[in-house]
Image 1: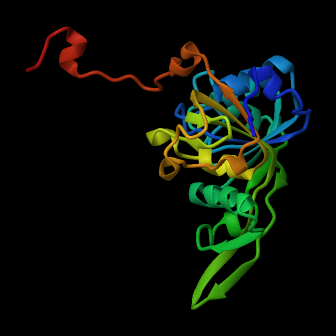
Image 2 (image 1 turned 90 degrees about the vertical axis):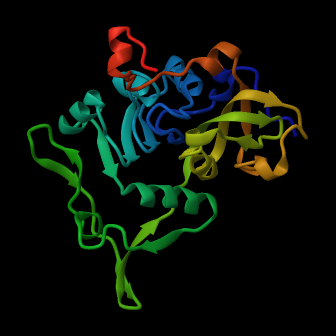
Length: 260
């Protein structure tokens, strides 16, 4: 089955207001920027986003966040996103913070058809006991807090019950993909992308290099096409448009001298 769609706008044409999205990426690595921009251009709003972080440096999900299109974020890291923090503290954004490994496993479990699992991460904290601020009231008070979770003991150790995550759609970015939706990720871009791809009921992948079926080594495929419903091929310019979050140079380079 050829899953290639001509444009990003066509690929996200049926994403409605209020949809839930699993979005790949970690910082600026492996972020499906082209698909996110297409959602922005369509004006989709009220989105529930599941992603490790919510964009950085006015890129990625930060584009939707700054436009007020995101209603809820499930993630692990706020980082240096000042607008994220402002909306959260002002009561404009609902946020569920989850330990990073737990978030990864919740996405994987959802994609694998596992409804819930037990993990020791978070036992004895507000993660398990409840009380984490999901939404503030804008005046410093908590309008909505996380509920307590089930805790059970196995072999003398306590574990908290976490539920698998499934979303309406997933947006991911791959280094290579074929027309059947098989995907290969490059180095650190293979972070939350495979997990997000599994969790979406409809998964849309933007690929830097589109190859024909048979052009990928089956042993190198990170996400099989069964998890992917749509593929868009990026232009060379889109594929190479990658930002650097923190550019650093040595002292000698900064002064124009060369160290040998």
